[in-house]
Length: 356
Image (cartoon, rainbow, N blue to C red; front, top):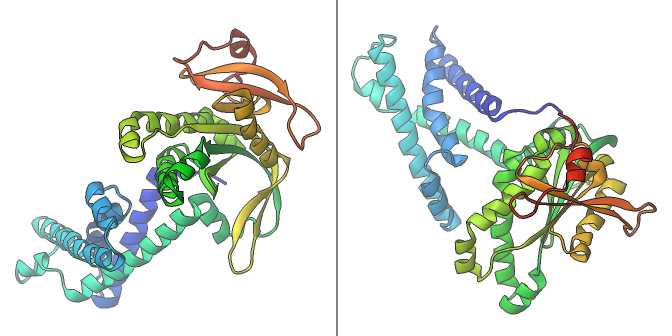
């Protein structure tokens, strides 16, 4: 599946918003210049989309997000009204200043008509609903379900990253299950930005573990799968003071990376889900278990490491071959650490990193 860049994604949103303005212009004004409706729609709608996606007034959104549902809804409606009014006035005054429109009164270009407000609110609400469903399912999963890509099982190659929270059971025993779940929610929230940045998909949360995946070519390109886990670790370490203040400890992670052929299929009747089958995902889970046995935080299979040119910020240590439960053959294992924590192995620089 071809990657869609953030720029392309925002361009698509702008085009949809502009199209809704053209439709409004045709339906209610029969104006021969539909671009006017497009300009009004973009100026009124894009600030709302940017607000919902936490690009605009991120701090304000986080504050109202903590409100009870009904209060949150009223607060959003009030903010929508302000953003749309400012957008309408900006578009109207700009078009008037350029001589594109000649209103009978300045009020016509500053005060938004009520029917325009209702139409814009309906369009924005529909787009926000689609975007939220897409974020809930994951962008890749949403698109795949929309086009029924995995309705029939297919074979493909993927990278999997398993991340597990160390000592989550002891934390729950000490602080209670509710507090442990709050910590997990905060931890999983910290995963979101690095996963999005490196074009991965959070496939599932299983207890105190998260499963992240990429199509193999995308995951190994620019060492995205490796950079993702170390960005997560760096983000947690950078926010150590807040973790200590809130939960009394800084989360420690175990992570494993492996890739190969799997079967991908859409399953379910009332609840649909795209799921993965095969030795690759089972091996990744077993590799993550080896982290505890080998006393390492991040492990990657030699098979996957040979496809990746590691960034200079990461060092690798060859741990040899190890037996993996449920697998007939032993698995080549490599430990990854931040470069300032350990000197890289010359053998790995010569033999593991794939050529550019």
